[in-house]
Amino acid sequence: PQYPGQVRVSPLLADPPGQVRLWELSDVGNGYDRWNEKASLTIDKMLGHAPLFFSPDGKHVHVMNDSQVVRWNVDELKPERFDFKNSRAVSPDGRYVAIKDGDDHVSVFELNSGKRLAEIDADGEWMWPIGFLADSHLLAMDVSDGDKHRCVSVFDVRQQKQLRRFRTDTTAAIQLASAHSRIAIVQMFYGTTIWVWDINDPTLHRTFNSEQADICGIALSPDAKLLAACTEIPPNGDV
Image (cartoon, rainbow, N blue to C red; front, top):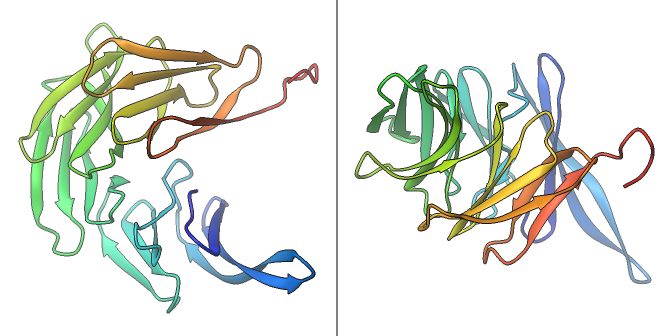
């Protein structure tokens, strides 16, 4: 996950529970730094596909399980637990959570108050929230239409309407990376192609292909000028 300053986190998954571990960077002298484990937090029935990220102020980490959203204060090391069943995405600022209510229905709630902000209906299409975009008011969905064609749709939470739909070639679940103006997706478990779109333009902006290397993680820089991908080494050893 992305991290600000001198702290980083990492999930260690079990089935169940899972564990989030926190490290802190310290100066050990002679120009050397060391990452020291600061704390760990057990999350019951942790969702392996769930995002793990810092809030913009760097003071909290958010993670989900089957029935809760957990906000962990990294200074006080106190977790706050919010009861939301079937939570699937938390906004980057930690204010909103997207809930999968059914195969074709998603609701967005305010995390602190529990107030429902939006209901999004796909009219019979299957959909799955895959992430909020940078301003936290746009929600990206993995959508399958009646012909089982896969798309990524971007919805405006405030207006409760679809803004864009991007057609993909994958038939498997999708993971998302986003910046202010662009989104990137890759097939989960595992794909070899990354698709990049500008959220204001329905035409495909760019594709990247790793050939035989499976892509197991992607990230876009905030200015959308850099794309990072984590790949597995193929069986033949060629990268």
